Length: 117
Length: 110
Image 1 (cartoon, rainbow over the protein chains, first blue to last red):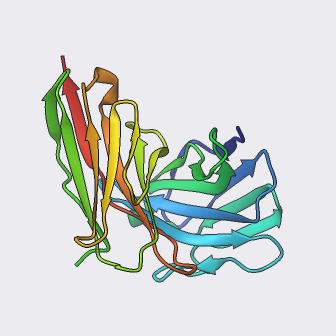
Image 2: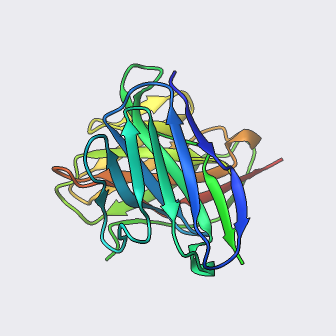
């Protein structure tokens, strides 16, 4: 089955800096999704990354804070800009892939654990 | 009312026990339902989809009650390896994104 790779797997950053997370899918997908999971919280969708058009952001998330690139059908990046300690979280990339039974499954990368000091 | 609500647990059960989790959802137009499993410091992975007629996969049974707007997950003969957080996931109508519950923590004890 297809695999989603994310990097970095973890990072510790100073406030005010920015970090770009990369996500690679080993098959072509129309949409890629970026989620955030804060400690003890559920996954929250940040935005949907569409190839060839701007990302679609969910309520509470803006492009200036979380710029997203989607240069082709297998790759996307999420940047967390001007970071503050409140941005400390796990950021997860995902896509809808064919599962082992053939049905489409929302599949996640291993996540990028970000700590902002 | 939150879109998807789960009892956070933790549920601490002995090996071999049967345990059930419920999840309620607020959007009556929701169309698809899933249970995901998330191990500590790992990404969520699909455990099973939930079908209207209920479905079973080995020791796991998922059920949907549209009238009362809840889904359930039953785990029989619990194993130590079942220890994880179980996330309830709901897909609304149209292009609304998947909504995740906060998860229910299960610890199976020897």
